[in-house]
Length: 257
Length: 325
Image 1 (tube, helix red, strand yellow):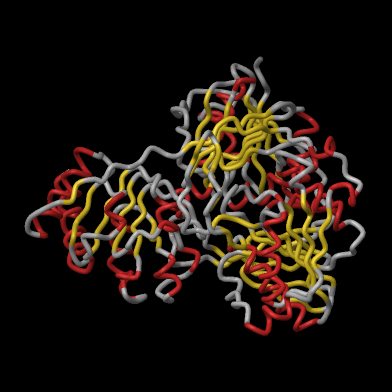
Image 2 (tube, chains in turn brown, green):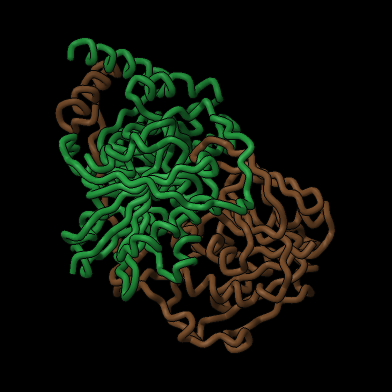
């Protein structure tokens, strides 16, 4: 089975966001594999181990993403591809990113493509479905269970806490929701092996893509932090008195109950 | 310049979701005096269309088809694309719900359009509209605008105020027949999760538990408090990882991002990744034994104490308030 994973390098979830000169500061920040993409990588490895085939992890971004791709290889992916757009484009919108990924994938005959259901930085969740649409294949988002039998696929999908039981078929793109699996940590032998696994680096030229093809149709005009919450009131006194005061405050001051 | 804007309403359990009315308000602002056309898909949903008009839509289009009983990206995109072909709107607004998140990128891709998703606020109107949306799960925000072409957005539930309902408003409700075929996805069954009665993303009140809840059993008083307030129960990653509750309840940067009117954090320390998911709630109450817990830094009101003592007292006190009211 020909399996691909779309992976994004993101800020660690424990990082605070600092803005300087209108830009989010990346210096000194820890970067990780987008947590939802980690589920996708884990699932891809499990599907391969069960059905055979090859797992290729693709990341679109800058050279720095090589570190996260090596981690994916150490987890057990077979090959990695870095589409480095650093020198070619300043900004990409979701349509542009999806176009580049689909151009790479279009002649690779993927059976299964996995991605996270959302990246925790941009948070739009558009790229997966857009890639599937450009490739003309079906997609199912926010999955928590995947069973493949030949080309038949049974999926459990999380819909705001409810579960949809779905039947569909390959080729297919799915996006991972939390609960799909428990991603493994790379083992030491895995890390050693990963160093020798193929990691291909491509630029837009290699995919015959022109910068104009991926010209964004939207533009970010400002990035800002939410107003800092000033610490509120810690109530004092006997617990019963505190609770009474709290209910009173919620009712009369905050007017939320 | 005024625009014609199409809104897709959403039905859940036989009723329109609030986010549909919020989407109409957003569409009004984008339309800048232009027409707002509401669309509704499903199996026997025509009666609900009038309510979309009462909330500000100028007219409504209804597509009823057995294939639209359950949401599938193929079925719904065929229906929506047919209406877009018919109406040629200059703007589209959909709720940023499970349905909207799944459907909107596909439709945007079909239309070769950009999409600004998860909008929490709109500044300006018409061509000058700028859209505010959270990034890094609410640790920061960005303002984004369209450079050209279709204005296509999804709006986060609970953020844009709906217009006042006016039952006297009239408008045309048109039934449109669309040929819906070749569904590649079959929904066999929808299993309702009993633990989350009210959807977290739309809940006005959330009572949330962390490691301090100590067990699955420990969530019971939280559920009772949530039920009393008509709210939902959430959890921190710590509580989910410890197996006290389902991941569907997790609030945070991994998990759901919520903005209820009232968020009551019980036994939650307040890791950055959790704060990202809830710190934009309107009013935050923290209950924690540890006076140094991070959660107190974002709380409007804090009680230092054992949640198993505080929550039952809180339930009692709110019941008393309801009796007196």
